[in-house]
Length: 268
Picture 1 (cartoon, rainbow, N blue to C red):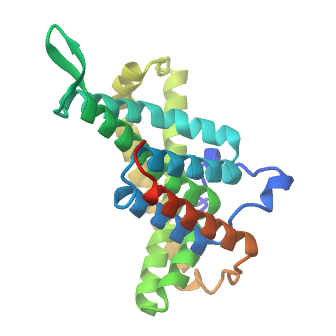
Picture 2: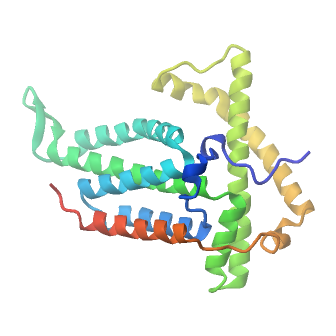
Picture 3: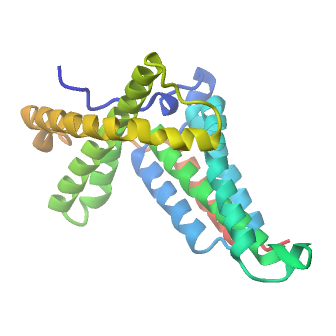
């Protein structure tokens, strides 16, 4: 059997309770525009720590509504090592007045601490915004949303971009599933990854090559399944029409408001 093309990673496919499901933004156009707006604003107009922190809290809350509190905690925990690396690099390498000195040598600079916190929050905002997009819309919905946004510019461009988006998004869960398969197989052979950041990083090389080889094989299966099912021409016509709900408009308005407030926030 060929692999399914519409599966999503287990950690972002958690359905919230019925009480909160009605508050989710499900229109892929709203998710695409909001995520793009937040990412662009985090790199351009939001330049203060309070503004970036407020934008991060908004995106984290949106992700919690979409994927659940447990998935949000896991996502934040995965961000912490990268944020810590960014913080350390900036406080050590960025020149400026010393905030902490040892034996007359600057260890931590005040501008470095500021930049490190700002850049770490920026990374968190960008990754959480993408997580909201992935959690709120599957591969078919993303393709349909992109097609609807681009078809007013060029129909042929919309068809191509939608198709490549669908195939790319559908391959992500297959790749994640393959990593889990290889890690499970190595665990049965006594090669389980030990705890600890550095030990886990050193163990990556033990499963990276098998995963890449398997990914190449499975990508061929996906390509063959796409051709046999004529997905390229049947994808968009087979999908139901999009309907913009009031809750989608509300989330888009909240995203615009959060970006504006974060951009106007001043350094405390």
